Length: 121
View 1 (tube, rainbow, N blue to C red):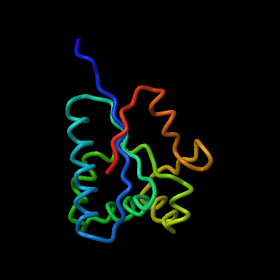
View 2: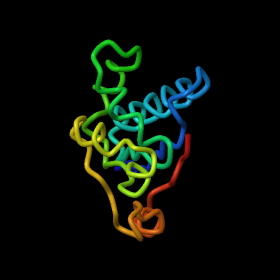
View 3: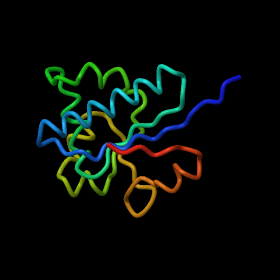
């Protein structure tokens, strides 16, 4: 039996520029690749990236369809950062869980301890 990979993909990119859109698209494609391979993958929005769930949930957004393909792998968004970037309402509106495992943030150490490779975009 092949070993299953474990990856945690952190989206840190803001929503401001074309480059930011490229980064979130790359994160979504990476999540899709892990998912299609049958691997364990978690997609987490952190920092300015907490603005993305609300944006990607909009049906007219260019990356909406790609987001839908991996939406079931979204572990959540940083609660602290969602508040700091005024994205808490849009995160909740996108039905994304607010994570606060370590001082209001997702536990990166917990992911590493559970065998996840952490990849940032």
